Image 1 (spheres, one colour):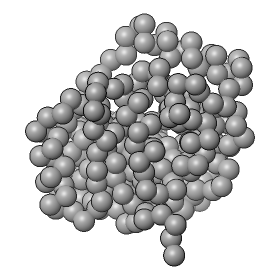
Image 2 (cartoon, rainbow, N blue to C red):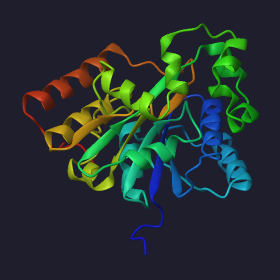
Image 3 (spheres, rainbow, N blue to C red):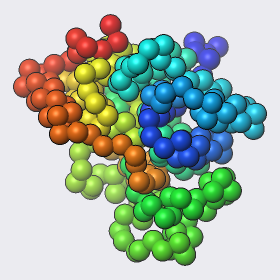
Image 4 (cartoon, rainbow, N blue to C red):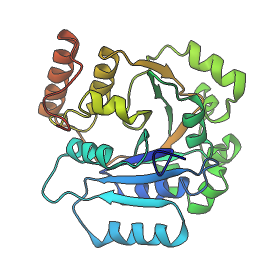
Length: 273
């Protein structure tokens, strides 16, 4: 008998364009792995638009879905922590509300998870025109992940399309040789809930952009290793994103990250507890 109602929680950090969030949700209605819940960490102001979106999704899907709605004005980092606490599984896959997941996305995260590790997935960024053209049908049929389909929409040929096509041994090799470090990125990473709670979750002083990276650095400081799976678990990153980090916010984020590295911090005093 399972200790938790679900094997995984898809934690969607939603604070951008509502139409992108809708496409993100559609991508979880056609996953090959089914035993998960979805929590929307809602940093939008409460509106009938997001309520209608959630109502329609629940009407068309049997996936458990809820949103964390702040009772007062909260920063995105505070909403993320509330979502972590309220998850009903022992494994959390964190994504952004502008990332469309491939049909085997959850399956890959669950197959590659390992005690003592967190996983760092990848994104394939799409230009504005293609992002806007993707329909619900394109997502359900997975056309939007097909290189030929993307080229008919004007996508230029380049190496990173291998994120969309790599499988098995090829994906493993590419994951090993990629020069980018395996970091916790809010747009596509996963780890054990107990490990996130042990480091006190996201630092709530952080502004959108770096809170995941800093949290990942504390995970590593606390003995958790990172594993690169960017060619195994891929999302389409829709653009443009209607969010900009001010210089002051960027400077604050960097100050906190530098402090975490310098002091080898494993917990934040500005987190869940």
